[in-house]
Image (cartoon, rainbow, N blue to C red; front, side):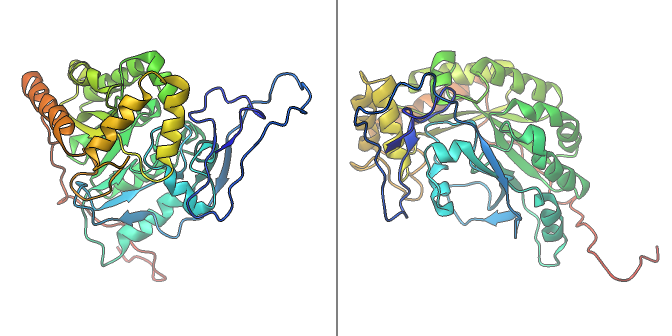
Length: 359
């Protein structure tokens, strides 16, 4: 990995360098030859945001592991910097690194709402719930300036289209006015990811995401506004965060969540190297134990992308976590299924026409 801590102050960043993307022909390794003069304090690595014109807003999938077949991502990359993020490898498709590039070189899609309106107006479009926040967080810090997620919600609310949102970002509270109105029509549900209740661990894993206590406050505010909220104990990291499973679910229930879910840590492609480097730096005493557990759940590999098992793994350890979850949600009165959303209210937006409306 091309480390950047020798050139930048990486405070607030999840990883320490840029791992080579799997499509790159060359790999760069920085080597300290001892000749660099002492230049004083290192400059802070800043976030860069560029823009792209999206050809389409809706992405479709046929995964049997997902409860939705379509999603929207307002941004590429995510400033939250979660070290474990399974979406990091998507930056390799852009010729950038899944490492620091993923959390510092972001791409916004400012015309996404206009493109979405056009797609929803197409005669061939068939309504079904749209997921927002599947690849990067729609309420990461740059949303405050760009407001793309809010624009998308305005379009979806206008046409009565159901939407499911997953986030860690407290900016979602800004949009309670839209979300509560949509909830009254049965058009929205929200999942809040709570990975740990330990603020110190959370800051190391998710350096620019809200603290655990703040996420529980988000659940409360959304629930008080009548918005169905799910607490997501995801990802569970064996021997690091999985001892907190029951405590996370109980805290989410007490905050106002109606349902719950969990997913095991996933390390596809470049994320495996990044996670192992992070463990070596912050938790060397248990790094081997964590990786051993993961390999046990994925047939000896750090990750296996097979359908039906990739989200939770398989084997005795995965079964134990699943049983603990089932017992906890039953005891706490949480549902494992979010309330269904209405699709019958959808009315497509009017398509642009050269002829003036007569009525």
